[in-house]
Image (cartoon, rainbow, N blue to C red; front, side, top):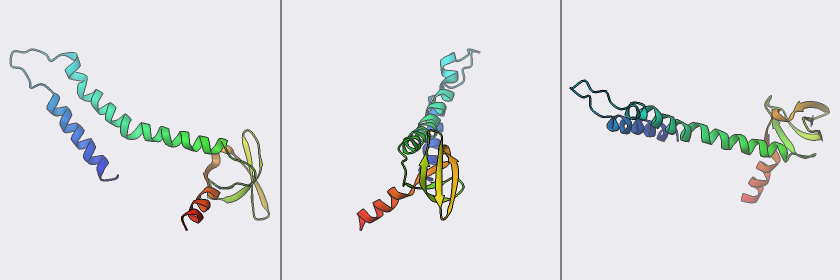
Length: 123
């Protein structure tokens, strides 16, 4: 993916420049549409490759956060792995060892239990 993205961007830029009309000698100005067409195409490429995947990822994370329940093993943004001992609308109490720490739901970035279940299923 790291190699494909720059190649696709380069190809889109080449395609945009190929669509541009050559300069005219009579002093005619190109139409407004042909002037902004390269910018429009670049915006479409950026939207497809950068904005859409991020929106899908955010939607998936938000869905994971809404499905959290007591007893789930989670990873927080701070790198703390623990088990949810209490869950509220906005806050989550994570037990790690003998300590309980309160976090906002937005601090939970990964559900660890699901990963271990997938590994066991593959074996």
